[in-house]
Image (cartoon, rainbow, N blue to C red; front, side):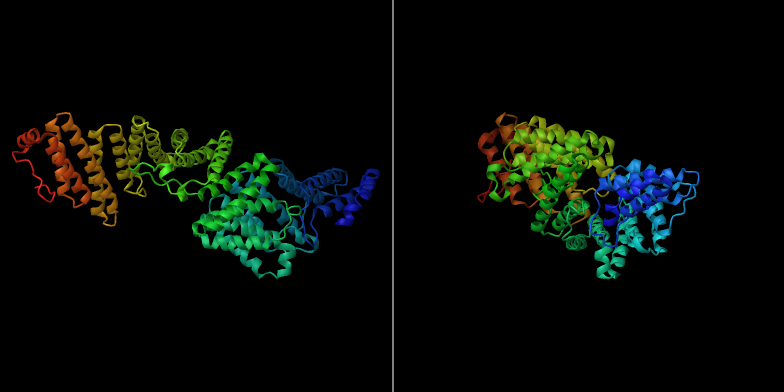
Length: 589
């Protein structure tokens, strides 16, 4: 091809002098330049491919429109190669139009290999333009065509059966049919494994690298993380030495590959390699963004998400407030890079959400939720509330569009907002999101059997905790009573349900009853104090928890010390029984 490229000015001169004689020669020379040779050492620059293919189309169009109409085959082939050049340049709609025109050329009879190659290019274009059902149909035709084709000479560079299988698998993956996709990738891998090493290195190296990179993502999506790690490492081995100058798409492939490896390593517990892969993914994506910020920003978002996930996500909200940053061990302090990554991720998602809110508003909401967690650990509670408020608003919009997909996330972020506001001393403002979180959880529990049944108990605890901090002990006690009933029902139906959760509910319930009794005593409301003490005594009677018993003893001791005569009278009036005494060992009798 090098000699032909160097001598191109000669047929160009002949074509200008006499199109009938020089035109076919120039067209053949251009097609030869556009078709890779024996050694597939590098990919030609997209600009050069586009220039050659445009010139080839112009030459063959002139020849085809001549009175003798001898160049139908040449025009069809030139249009296919032009469509491929446009595809490489990312101009998919124009490329599809060229592919359509190629199919409509009158009298064209391309060789079987070129016909299969035309189907290959069309499959790629239909996929990129979102016409996935058509793309799958054409991909199957492409596989069938390559299966019965024996390429000769330079046509061996125009695709292969293994590559056709890879492309069909890629289309299936884009359609969400991941299991079928992975099966086809495995079939492609078997074909490549059966090839001699020299043939793979010279002709199928890029196909193998692409296949391994793509199947890594499919295996990760199926949860087959060990296999994904193995395939990803194979892809890195086969791509060793691929210079981005010769293989421009290798950086793009590695960006995806390292992102998938980061998630897969994390799932297998190898956090060191997961972080290393995530760092590589972010670095590769930054390189891509420098080249094309418009189309490559989404890849940087994916890479940053893989890295931020390794810092540790926010724990499931409970009734207990988050610890203060000062009380955390040093190991629990957030990594400074975590805050930087989350801020960058939030900014990128906010930019992308302007044009694609369906895809990026939930991602922005998740990033803001994690950012709020970091601010909380650092003691920046107001900033944590601001980020959590934005997260809730975004998840609320997402839930309005897709209730099934995002209502559970809305409930979760509302629950975390309760904690953020409480830590920022916005105690009364914490009650409303707690009520909403509980209401959504109740509704989801009725319709979604996959929802963990203890979530309602947790949200009841959270509402009770926020009510108590807001000074509403009456409603807090009602929440604790319901939480106890629900948790006991869960444990009766499924004994494996955590007893620790019941212990937490009963301990908080007893503490609230004691605080309520003390408040009534201090205000001189002895009948109300007796009601609280009776409930506390009953609670102590149905559990053997030392924490509950201690709260009960303390409450009765407080009552005896603060208003012994008045409380005894109120107790006897309510129960006709004498007021329980405290024995020498501290027990209530």
